Image 1 (cartoon, rainbow, N blue to C red):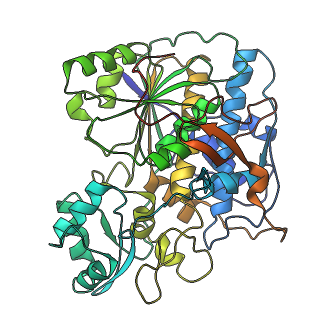
Image 2 (cartoon, rainbow, N blue to C red; image 1 turned 90 degrees about the vertical axis):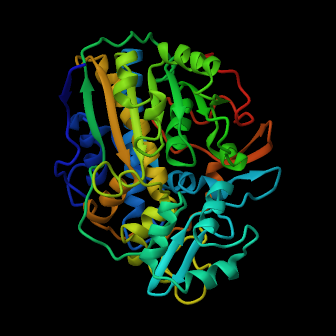
Length: 478
């Protein structure tokens, strides 16, 4: 394979200051290789006082959705042979979607987002943040600390108070558990997105269609929020999205009920010859693969980006990790809440204002703060979808070849902390999310859920299908 660089994402761009375009949107759009001339299509409306925080979360959120919407509009024009439609982003819709997991109701039931052993805890010399939502992560955390399986929050808190935060962090890491010491902000930065063109294979033609991603085949190898939000968005825009999970790794069905809209879901054991053959058959006609596992985790199965692009030239491979693609933490597990703790966001947001209801304050004292949403997850999700849509367009407008896109939660955090100038809300209009919430019947029951904030003139307003039961679909394209 041959490689050539394209559109480095870490070039400076205007951020939040005066000018003809929204600075953060222009920055994201430039990082994705988009034409600056299309930014005049983008406008914003709706309440300004949403997603309040010390950091510019509202600006990040609306910019990621705007970039995704503009990428969808651009591809829609290519497939419809018309002008690029106008993009009008409602900030209320954005704020509602950025906490979609909190708005979800399943037959009237409110899912639990964070388990009892997930949260901030005082350590001997500071604070740590744990993540124990999945049973295997809970078991590893307790095992690392020498605690019994029936340990409750009080017993965990007592143990954590006896040890330094860094010791807890490293002990958990060695055991495959998840705990991160809360640290003040630093000056380490990561790129928002990295894009490489690989080879010169021409992409298959895409016929005229009413939706920009209609007929595009997407293999979704992601979990939790960021990756599933990206593929949920591609499904909204017409893609045939098939999520594939390992047979031995559990998933929270409530989480899938939120992020599984528009998709199908199956489970495969890639060590099993029959399942491996099924995967290779899917890959042979796939257009996009999105992965959300830590670096190296998929390599043993022949799913490293280079291997995928070797077997399927012209493929778009979008990779996501937690901690960035360089530095000592590149191979570590992570989630949005842990990255907030580990890059200084939790210290910046400390206090009563700007703190969201995501499990902070599990122990006594004044805890570190949190963003008003899992904004790193959701924002990165829309940026991934935007990058895939831009790549689909770019492949067919003079830049053939496969694409390797790399994102990280740490990269989005860097942008939030260092790349966007905070702006005060412009008005105090109350924000009522009900306008952007609807109900849909599903195999899980009646789902009360947030609508997608992705919007362009003539675009879809809801998904064509509800989430099916996780892991129950056939491993086949529609």
